[in-house]
Image 1: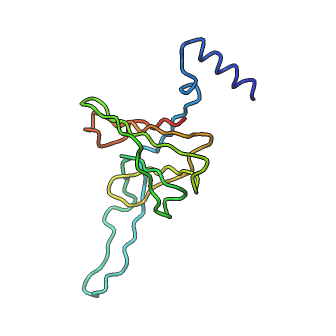
Image 2 (image 1 turned 120 degrees about the vertical axis):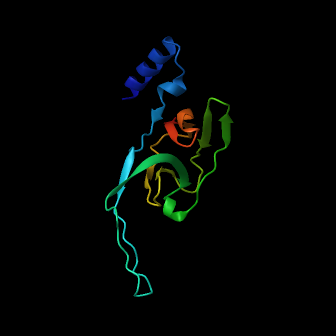
Image 3 (image 1 turned 120 degrees about the horizontal axis):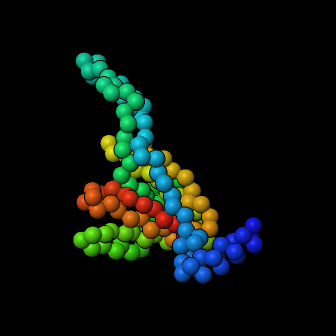
Length: 145
């Protein structure tokens, strides 16, 4: 395996590709999430909770990073944001000395439900690029290296 990595790095360098990009990987969130909602019973017996649209699909719009599971609510802020009229990119960094490994969460419109997983090793930086076609309101790509 180590030999393969060395060959891949050598090929990347010979084609003028930076080694960082040769080792980068894209994290892709599902484009939608089906959520089954359930309401708590209203305290006033005159009201009744009804799910009007069961199994509603929620569209992906963004990501967040946290130290450990997002259930712990230790969310990270980007260390840098690069923006212009045509682009917006947020940069997040991670360290082996962090108290918890980083997790990525996929965010969906009109629900508080997220899907989440640890950022695969050995990544120490993720760049989140926003889509200019949505006025930078949704994520286009997440590259980690």
